[in-house]
Length: 275
Picture 1 (cartoon, rainbow, N blue to C red):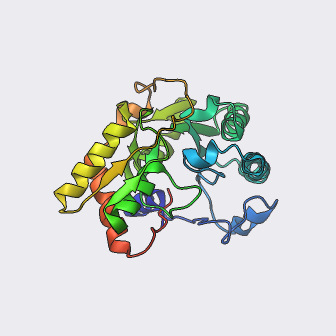
Picture 2: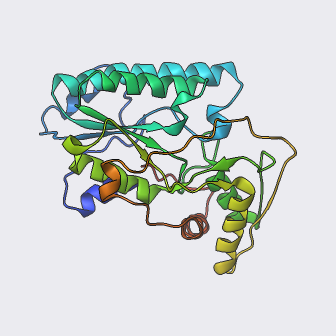
């Protein structure tokens, strides 16, 4: 069960969950009609074709076309269903919505569509959310490294590590989404969910190694000579309505310790914990 659903259930909310495409394929028009017999009061719309940098920045044409096609079909299914029933919702976007690739394009489209609804939908731009997940094409860098370290005590970066990120633990992101639901009609149109702290991936590797060391585990990260594709260095806006009620509570080292611990406990190549 995902962190967002857990946060809500822990606070007494009744939650209906779409776990993955095998459960409900949101690209299929009318698929959500199955929920018409329930009194749905709110929706947290997270289901987009997304992944880590190696996926969303892939140069493969089929990957980029797939990102656009799947997301547009989901929007065409989900957003009209919500608006026809006047169900308020929060949409998880990304600080990368301005990038010139399939991922940025579909996030911009989602934001534009939601803005046109006049307040029924709100947008949260998530900044580098990390947590335990299945490791593969779509997984994120900290998860990749933590899983490799859990299995073999070392990890290999696909880049030179000089790129910078702002990380947000999945539990903190789940709390932001839950608070956005509770404060929906107070919320700004768009809100950033981030720690506000920039860190290079080389320094993040050092934090991961220190977190592993605190548990008595090895975790050395080696770096490639290849530079990461350049990204515009943006600044999150952290003084909106959301930030009166929400602040991230999990420091990066604690989040990394949990990450390695979860992969070690899983005894396999990682397990999926979706927001």
